[in-house]
Image (cartoon, rainbow, N blue to C red; front, top):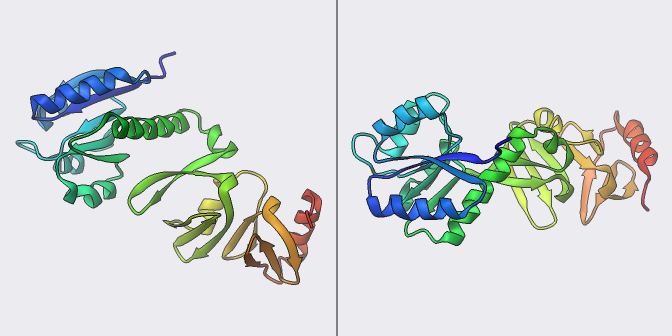
Length: 236
């Protein structure tokens, strides 16, 4: 089975197309299936070849890369490769995987390609998500979150704050929908809080201590929460 990511380069500059082609050829998990000069060529190629990934310029004749993405239904995943930084936010609002600013070093290209590989590995093997990680959208970027990084999660209406040892990540999601993505070992202690049981070090009344943080437990859930923690193996 071919698990390579089938990709297309679209740029109106020959030098840029040549540079990206050379980079793609160096990455074993990428397969270049087409090179286009503008969005019109790309539209036809997508219809015929159904690529997984586009390396797409923004400033092109006829349609810009942004206009192209807005005009197409269910486009492939996109990594923008452009000389213009000012479109970054707009790009991420269109759910792109990464945003490369020219001139692009191979190191930076490889980082974006690896991000794409992680995305497609997860898409092709959904069970991986339950085992170890998920992708979350943070400030317009797709970021990998390992479940074992999480200290606790706090819900605020339609937003969540995910606390780790060194990060505080804010994402657009509800407690309920995100909880469904989590593997066994996480419990909801309150309508607004989720914790991984193994990170709990102290039980203090209606509070759980996780590292240097206190996580509340609702009164109606307290007995059940304590039962789950004891069943799993309380550390302290």
